[in-house]
Image (cartoon, rainbow, N blue to C red; front, side, top):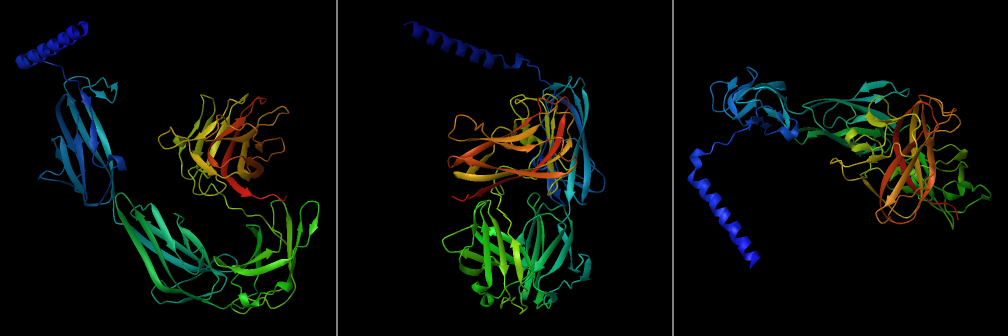
Amino acid sequence: MKKNKFICKIGILAVFVAFLTGCQEDEVNLPTASHQVIVTSEQDFNNQVNVDENISFGDLSSGVISRIWTFPESVTDIKGSDNDVTATTDIVQTSFNTPGEYTVKLNHSFKSEAYIGTELSGKTELESSIIVRVLGPVGIKLKANLLNKDGSLGEALDLSDNAENEVVASEWVRYSYEVEGAPTDYLWNLPGGTPDVFTGPETEVDIRYKSLGTYDMDFSATRARPFGGDTIAFQKLIKVIASTEPVTLDQVVEREGNLAMVFSRDIDPESIDISNFAVVIKDGRNIINPTISSMYIDEAETNAVIIEFENDRIYYGDEVKVSYTPGNLRTTDFVESEAFTDVEMVFDYPNMLVGSDFDYSFENSTNSNWRIAWDSFGEINVTTDQAQDGKVSAYVEMPPHANQEFTWMQHTSDSGDDQRMVFIEEGIYLLGLWTRLEELSDPTGFSPDVRFYWKSENAADYDWSAPILSLFTEDSPIGEWVYLSKLVRFRETANYEVIIRGWNEKNTGPVNFHMDNVVLSKVELRP
């Protein structure tokens, strides 16, 4: 019964309040706070618009006595008004007829001191400015030149359909461009070239043509918001002709346990004879003379010859050399290869972090994506001051006596909450890092270091057994990029989160360094 009486009393009270509100509406005088709130229809896109496209300005402020919008003269059209410079309405729809950056002003008079956000401004009169960036159409101006043997710029190419500019096999063409309209995305399609498809904002690209034939090309520059773009395309622009220059062996690399010989231009598959080749492998203890089981042209890279072995393969750490005794090996333009002896193979493992959420190169993140975790002290900043590759790197400042609690650097999502994840299969990996030491101070015999720690989605804690990835000693060069790598083991196939730890506990001064291009590659060790 008590419960029912309580409900009854609450219900009666609600009816009473409703009665008072309905009967005394004209007598209630609630104060209205003065609060400045200004919005635009393109505020989520940095107020960027195309020429002659609409952009609206809104004043959602409360406690306003009067307002006046002021727009730049001669470039603005205020919709529904003969006055294109000023307006007093709360919503103003406009367009701009000339590309450029313009300032729109809003002057407010409020009934009382106005809030801006959550802060009280202390003023009843406020002036605000909104920057609008008006973009013209996207446009491309393209140039193309042959490159001379010394790398200098050579003859300009005829940029027109069916020009069939002659390029000698294995030589280079430099494409360069200028753009208008601030595009953000670029796409090159260059069939017959190396590379043949790629994206990137570089204003100069060098393309090598190695295969005989006639090739088209196209280049696009676009932006998503405000939408716009331009494409330049030519049919039969490049005609690759035979060369009289010697063919060269440019590189010998490991490819999935096999050996790849990369030549300066395409090799005729009919000219390959296994009996002319010999490979020697040294695994640190033994010398192995593997039997070659097959040789073939790489379908994706027709100037590369792949060597496979019978009952054997190349493992990480092997020393491998290849030799060729003169036979019939020739290019597709009928130039024969000279002999070569004991050319050393190098490992060129793909970096599995490329394309992952973890920004291994720092090119696609800002300071907000990197933080010093767990309330530690120190700083990490994404900067264009130095870069091992690309345009940016991370600059880390470790203060004196920074112990293991320092510089737990975490890569976060744009929201700042979710740690970036990397999918890794169980196995042995090569983990590498480029660093550039700027200041070492006095480590007093205990060298500062950098380590990576990781935790799988199934683990309760991080794997604290990670090796030192970068060590700063008195012998470390100042102002030079240095690459160090270590073999590490991931014990299960899972998503992993990664943190980076810096240590400087025994140092009486700071240690400052740049960090760039984290590398993670799966490797196979010889049994």
